[in-house]
Structures are given as C-alpha cells and as structure tokens.
Image (cartoon, rainbow over all chains, first blue to last red; front, side, top):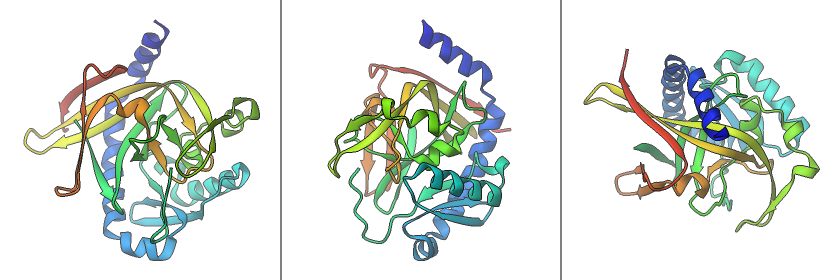
Length: 101
Length: 155
C-alpha cells in the first residue's frame, strides 16, 4: 500500500511537458556528443564530461566525496543549474580501458 | 519498448530519474549490465540528482558487494524512484512514456558508470543486436515491479 501511495504521489507530480523538454534537449546533447566522440576521447579520456548546447566541460573522475562535490560545482557553474537535467554527463573511458563492473 | 544504443561497444540506455524527493527530473546515462544484481548510480550522477551524498554514504549504511572486477562498497538510496524511458515514433508522431518504479537504487562511489542491474532488467526481455546496433528492452508483464506505459502526440 505504501508503495502504491509513493507511485501515486510521483505520478501526481509528473510534468509530461517538462519530461519531454528534458528529453528533447537531452537528445540534442547526445547527438552532439556522438558527432564529436572521437575528439572527446582524445581530449577527455579518463575524465567526466558534460555536454550541453554544443559546449563541453570536463572534470576529473574521483571517488572522493568532497572532490566530487567541488567538481560538480564546477560543472554546474559552467553549464548552468537549469541545464543540468538534460546535460549529457558521462565518464569517458580511456582507449582500451577494461571496465569490470 | 525501451530502446538503447551502443557506445564503444558498450550497451547503454538513457532514463529520466524522478522521485518525490528529487526536485527536477534528470537524464541519466546507464550501462545495461545483465551481470549486476542491483541498479547503482555513480557519485557524479547522485550529485546531479541532488541527492545528499553525505547522508547516503555513511559507514553504517555501507554494503559490500562482489564483482568480477573485485569487491566494492555501495550505499542504498531508499524511496520509490521512477525511471522514465521515452521513445519517439515518426510513424505515429507520438512519444511513448514508459515508467518503471524501483523501491530503491544504490550509490557506488567507486563506479565510473551508472548501471542498470537485474533488479530492473529482470522485468524485460532484452534484445542486444550488434548487427543492427539496436538494444530493445521489451516489458514482460510477468516480470514483477510496477510500471506504466502510455503515449501522446508531440505538440
């Protein structure tokens, strides 16, 4: 029952127009990311990149919370808080890097 | 149907995460990891979602999990979360909304990529085709978990 209430609450607050907006901008950012992927790997391998409106911002990858927060502040400042929802943010593996998750 | 894509030969899918605790929906890029038991997000994505990482990453909440790359620590993020997958059909000029509900996800501070694990993927029949370059997640209605699907015209 509790789960049902949670789900109903989420659905009540869903703004489909907002979701569509996030996706539309997200697709544009993803497209730019795809088109420029070779250059992004060359320049940013081993780092986290954020792509928004044809702009790329990168920060180092870290598992340290304080460092991650500082890096996140940099990303937010550079790309704008309002753009964070649709920004394509991802880790760029180094060429031939083996990920065993 | 939820559709993914390949990046560097890795199967990926994008989803918008939404919960009553998250103020704004955020687009998250996931690795489709059929070998992972649980869905886990990176530190960077947790910060993007506005999660209080200091509260979540506490020693008393730590869970040690094994992986083929070695053991690592994860921290549960409780509270029902909606993962919304959106697809566009040019034939109907409609956008489909597929919302899956998870009772919890996890935060993996050492992860470099957020992963969709079997707690969600077991709900789907998954087709990963390198020939066509397509990844299709087709909902199995007997797969458990809450979900809602609907479509509406593009405005």
